[in-house]
Length: 123
Image (cartoon, rainbow, N blue to C red):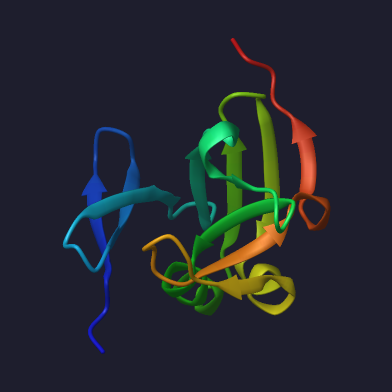
């Protein structure tokens, strides 16, 4: 199977933009990877991306596996509530739940209670 993961360097923001290509051919921007601190940061609206079934957040399985090989951290920023959820890709892979639904590619879900949580101050 070919990789559906693509990246694009954004020199202005000093980050690497991470995309996944759905079966439909649509490219979804998943987040931004910062090489200097080995962190993938995903900005999500709770009302659209929070999964009640798992009481947490899901990220594409291929992306979690890729970044676990790098030993990267994963950060999900809830843009509606200003809460920043932090974990490692390895923890998400080992303790998360895999599922695929609603026409999406397989994702790994981690309960918000399994993340380290801290409140972000909105400007």
